[in-house]
Length: 304
Image (tube, rainbow, N blue to C red; front, side, top):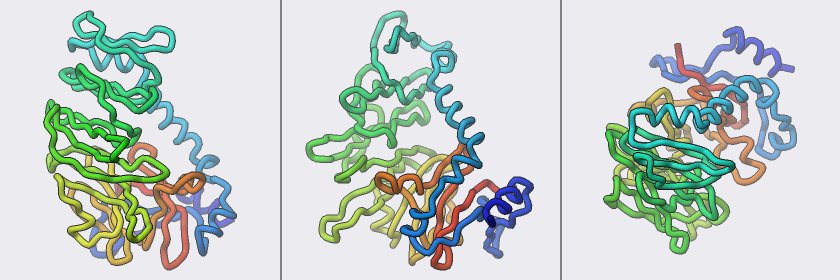
């Protein structure tokens, strides 16, 4: 019953967040429930309190995601540009100055700055229409980005599992990464500091999966003694990711690194284990972290 009391105390603001004493940290980690000795024990006792007690917040966030792809939202975003958007039956149609330039279905991503436009669909493969042509992105995670009137996107050759990063139509660099059971590309972000790519790859020699982070072509895992990097994304407009070093979990936010109470955070699990990965709900998120040898369930929020 401990987690029930902590949940209601959390709502009232009475649960004490974890803090390192030497600084005011930007994120608060609120322990909700837990003390599982192993992933096996966690899996046996798992009953998804997330869906039950955060259902309202989850529903609101999912509605926001769906609304971002609605006809009304896309049409409003394109007002004042050369582009216009329509739907007919199960198809979407994109026009430039009243001339049809693309059509598709199963739209799952849209982005524009009124100069450039990106529309991504699931056909036989994952494809994105960028300005005037289709690109084979082969991912639903590391999707194209717009920054200062430039388009950044990754393409994949499925035969060689070679990935290429482009700025508009200029190739910046290539790298290889293969994941035998899923998508290797996890995230692409662009900011004033450059281009960031998170991916997972199979290390054949050690027979294990490794998580990597590339910044402007430099692999931070290989160069800075980190053993893991994950959940690269924007939080409140600031670049964020977790990483592991010397057996401890840290996070980077807006170019600064901070400690956490964890030795491990469960993430990017395959198949049914995916339910234990961090769940982002806008600018807050939920995670399972290992502290003092045991796993706990946390809600993470920005400090006020």
